[in-house]
Image (cartoon, rainbow, N blue to C red; front, side, top):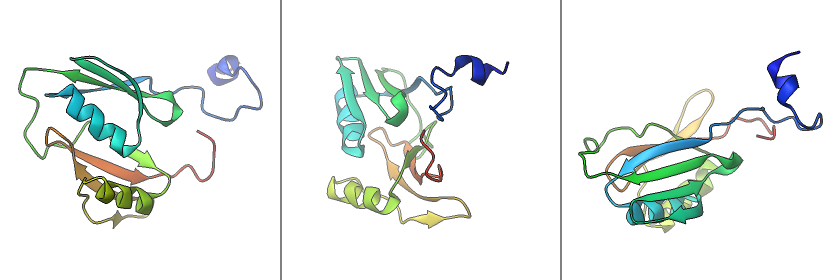
Length: 135
């Protein structure tokens, strides 16, 4: 028996059986970073002075953890990208929320744009390529 067969609880559930649980991003100000990611569409779960937890589609949690250490050079690419269903609407929402995105770019699979996060890291917002599959 394959691992996927062994871990599937419902044979009608066609989603992959594995997801990323948590992704961490070090930030200088948890409150500012939390507000920024909520504007992007992440769901608020928890926030304290030095840590916040936000939820993405599929249940992955973005952990924002405050650090006093030097984070990175402004313009450094974030260690993840964010995938959305409607790249044009998401870019428009960024502009409406005072987040200034780059122009949309294209390749053979994706469209994307880049925004600057609250600590100066660059976050790529990329179009979904699930082809209508449930994820």
